[in-house]
Length: 565
Image (tube, rainbow, N blue to C red):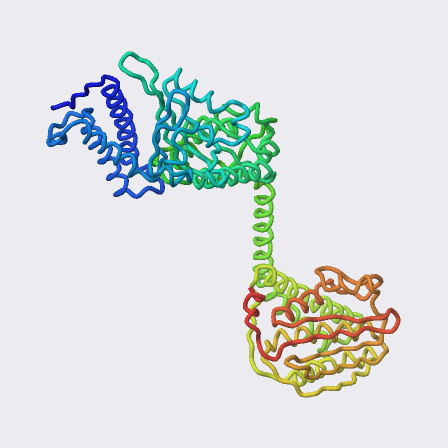
């Protein structure tokens, strides 16, 4: 390779230093291209930049390719190519300083970033680029001292443009020396990284907010594990749930949270293996607190990888599901109970109905002449009817509880249904000395007749029972898109404290024990009415009587299916 000849050794040394500096810069950018760490820089533009630098290195005699130096006429051409290369860089301020810090050269990038033209800045001290507080503290000369002592100085900090605006800069100052090692000046490369700093600060603040949020969570144990399963972070929820303070647990293997039998079969290691292989692992199982007590935990382990896809650890989120597990078991027990009751009802009702028919037949038979025997048969029939009603109500309760109260809708008139039910109560009404007054306006809708009759029967039975000796009024009327049924008695009434709870299971108004009943009729009625999209309410004054009002939509609503379920 032909190397340019310099008559002045200082020029030769400077050319070699420039070539070395450019070679370092080229290697750095080639590494960033290969690693894919270009940030916002376009790849094509970056490649042109590196090729231009390497061409300048060859021109300065710092390379090994003879092709690149062919036709180089001499020193002047090399220096001009180097000047053109540096001047073409617009993203970096690249300039030279004298040993005392005076600006000795200026490129296009320096003018764009700092705002000064070459004639405005050449010969001025580079401290002009620093904020006043840095100048007052002696920072600019201190940077040159470090660069001269250690070869280079690198930092990020605030710098000042010509117009007084500040920008965040990445700065590299390199000391330049001749062949004898004498300091001959400095090269200074500055880049405006304000936008990068803003982005990094946004990320930092986001990470800080996330850290504070995680640390503040009290219902979940949220912490990090290193790739080997050792605890790396610890939040307040983890301390509250597991009992360890951060200083007691960080650095220990997470298997300490598992029962002995789980550790023996290496289940913790298996969880990490599956999380790493599948990205995520979730389970429920027993875990152990610091004091040795166990709790039922819901656990999610997620594998963490960096931008290059390397595995760097795990996140682990644990929640105490002991109460949830107990609730699920209780719900299952209730479901099994209700299913048993439904089965028992079917098994009991068939023989009971046959027995009741026999007893009722004997009670009505003229062949039974003994008055005491006939009275006992009548009491047996009454007890049988009461038992049959209880079994029916138990089935309704079980159906409602397990969501099997299915409605069989058909078009009908509410006033007709009321008449049919009241006709069946004629004898009972006469016995209770309760004249029944009907005020029935025709109103038609889509309802389940059997269930509707059950509601009317429950309400009329109560009216005759608690209003004995007084008039009972029943009315139906249309009201907008609804049908209204009112049943009024003038009996003992209901205290205001009891008016809400009488619609709950096994609840009855105070002072009504002697009237009998199981405390299920109104609850079943409310459940049926609500399943059909309606509502039931009561207004009552103790000693004056009660008014029960049922309001039903004449057309089924979309939510009816959800209510039935």
